[in-house]
Image (cartoon, rainbow, N blue to C red; front, side, top):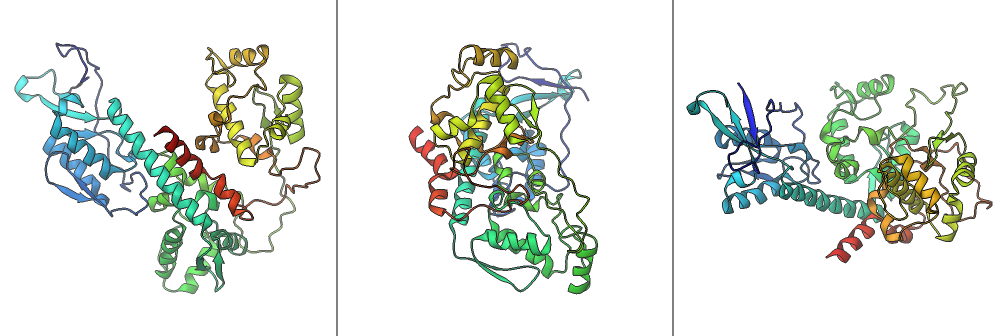
Length: 444
């Protein structure tokens, strides 16, 4: 079968088209979509053209219906943050205007007889209206998730019994998660990466109650056998391929299409079979932090800071002191500068260049190294997330308010397991949610 895709904004003769092979994508076995805080299958999907509807969990049936009955394909369904609202929006638009005003036309058997040709329609984010809709749905879902996460961080009424012993925990959720990580070598990730924590724990508890291993997901005859299996096989962890857990990790709402396995890899604690394992041969790897302006790498915090100051005139300690930057503000500043230079743009004047090298030369020559834009430019929620996933420079940032010669001693041997809840008022004032909602209010 020969296929031809005609762009919906083609010439008046319909010949301004893109010719390419077309394959209808196979549906993934797990049937995953963008994560939903309500859990899978709790909403209805309504057809764009007729009264047909199915539960969200059975979305593949409706997509098949759209293809066979209405000859319409929706691109990148798994990247749509709220599929039910997306479908309702386009259902309304298709009532107002013909589908050809929005969709690309796919002609099948284009070289054959006219009577054997069929037109199929592709709805995708090449259309600006569709792209804006997807972005708005993602932004709204992210706001809801961040609001929920902030509420869970502030919730002092949390109460839950450990899944592996009889200890009870009341207060902040991090106390239970830290306990399971320390005492039972079981970690589901850092609390700051988790949302809908109670539902997450209930999901895991239900599996254990059904005598199911959390990792290999096999079922056993009794609790003792299950316990021995998880201990001996080092299965005290959750299954990275089980997309049922996607909705419990914030990263899945930030960058749709990205899975939570990367979040779990952030936890560098090794799973061990017993507490007496010999760690004497363990060696730490050097930091190898990369300079903000060139490819120079240093293995210690002092070396990389000294290099940036002497080679480029960039003094992060001075900026931290002058601007009174707290830890997360430093994180956002570093990520902002990384992203601007990666995009070959001067962070001081926003001028764009052909290459990163030209950008750095301009920054140094024009004295823009220590020239930062207004705080509101870089103090944004998106800069909580690194430009480079393995940016070790972020690990060297100071998490105290002391000056660089202060007396605070940071132990490099103690892993940070959970968020610091010692100052909840400060957390509320500097949270991602407050900043996000403040920006939304100012723009409306």
